[in-house]
Length: 260
Image 1 (tube, helix red, strand yellow):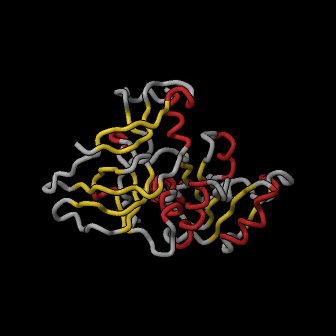
Image 2: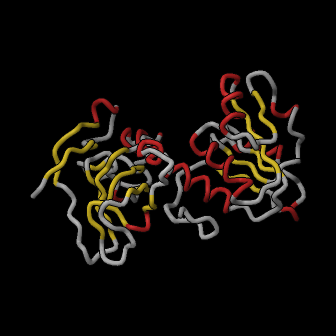
Image 3: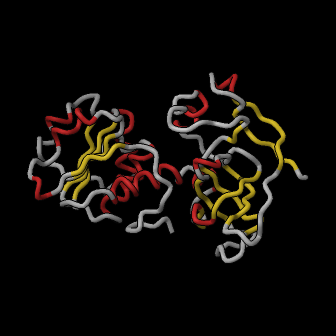
């Protein structure tokens, strides 16, 4: 059996104690399946990876050790199952299923439905960081069924925030977008996402002095603190205002906004 190097979670605990690089069996592909074997070129780290390793989420699911680490990846298709639509040599990016994590390895086996062709304008490192944050942003915005006059997306240079800020207008039809960042990030945000209508420097200005209460249709809650953002939502229920937490995606492509 062929082997590979992989980052492995051996127990819950401090990262330096719980994680180790070791030799493990290389995944094998059943060519009649809908899976794809990818030679990993880059894998992105998410806060979720650390929370899992530290045991912070063990009330949600039990881990069987040793366990693979990581969700986000990009790489080159080594082998593809029948009728998956992928071919050896394809450059791809995607997300490992929560139940079969292991992107931080030389090879990864995952369902074809969790992969997309890598944009040629992006490097492997860049595309590897799109998966979790991109799907989270897509699903958060797809959840909104109301008016689309104003979207307030705090943390516009964070992983999920930066994705949602770019998708809000172009993919979901919001007329105006507002974000808030710290002083050092104002200029770079305006450069990278120039169509944002209002950028609030929250280190210098209270967003409440810029954004009127009850004026926003959609708020992406980046910290799980809904009480801090609820005042901005419209009070007119007919406009169906929405506040969505920035949390782990369900790993299903939103039908209104597919990955590819």
